[in-house]
Amino acid sequence: MTSEVVARLILRPPADTGDAFVREAQRRLIDLGFRVEQVDPGGVSFTADQIRFEEVFHTRLIGREATILPVGQRDLKRGHFEASEPINMPVELADVATAVVLPLPPQLFP
Image (cartoon, rainbow, N blue to C red; front, side):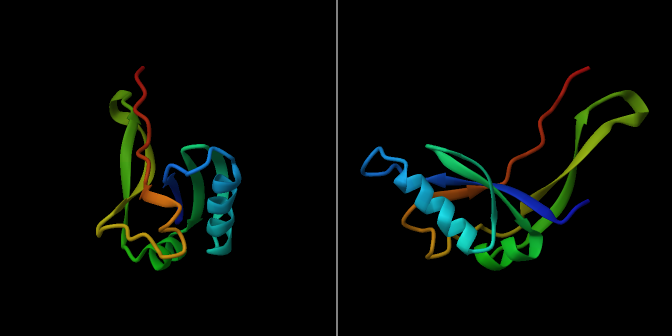
């Protein structure tokens, strides 16, 4: 399994409806060493090396594997991470975000 972590920063509702708030959250993630993948009004999807993620969010991640397509003896599996300790919001993001979530792989059906 790769050590790249995919996560989503859930944004606080901004006082104004401009996209400056979203750009600010994006800038702060980049300043912390993350790669921004996708941005929308509700959040920012980003990636990072596992070690960097654990350092910034003061948590420990465990690599897991999930079956995304059951096909008998050759199930299709995909790796993902779970936090073994709470994910802590750093002060640099606390005023723009409410949470960080680690997505689970989708379940597909044959």
